[in-house]
Image (cartoon, rainbow, N blue to C red; front, side, top):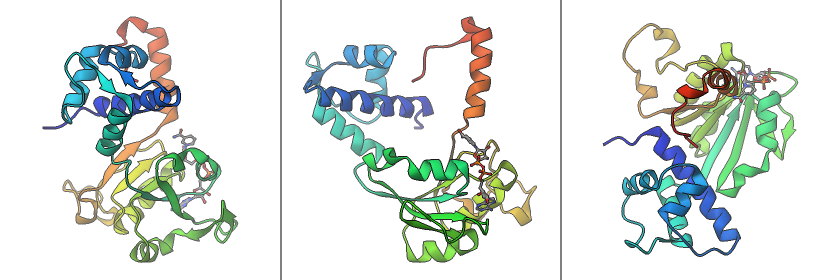
Length: 227
Ligand code: NAD
């Protein structure tokens, strides 16, 4: 069965809460406690966790380090993830320079752009390569994810380059919907081979602003907070 995206978002929130409890040397928690800290119901917490197994003892709650370890495992954060950034303008450079990604073993292994002023430059100890060399790069280096930080009108082509290079996860920062089909076959309905198994996640702060504007004007239409 499929698991709602919101449940996975909440697991990420629960993990963050468990990390902060661990830092405060708190060793036990409960679905009530997690629920309160996450702004959801205890039923929701138990339901979200139940998708992945039984982690607590009935009436006893959870052991913080054990539940944390289990969530790390469920989310796949107990292995390393090799990431390339495509588009090394303002956003791409900001992402590359932000240290948080290395908390879990996300590591930037390659940076790509097309602009002659950027190709060949070093950012955080990595050289920016031309996007045309991406496939060659992925033949030689394992790449799990690509962050897309190119202008919206370049996003489909750049995403295609990632799919062609065999990258199976794309975090798209451009405010565009990426179509999982080859550029030369645009308009076709079926997903083309290179896109099979590719997951696209969108991070769109402009969309967030628009949702926020709507909910400020229509607060009574907001459903339960989805952290
Ligand atoms: P920018 O113009 O500073 O940088 C874009 C870079 O992409 C440039 O260096 C350009 O040379 C490069 N590029 C263009 N085509 C390329 C290709 N085919 N392959 C590789 N690189 C290519 O833009 P920016 O301000 O960094 O914004 C980048 C994207 O992120 C835009 O789509 C913007 O709308 C979006 N954005 C998203 C958020 C967010 O929160 N998601 C925030 C700000 C900007």
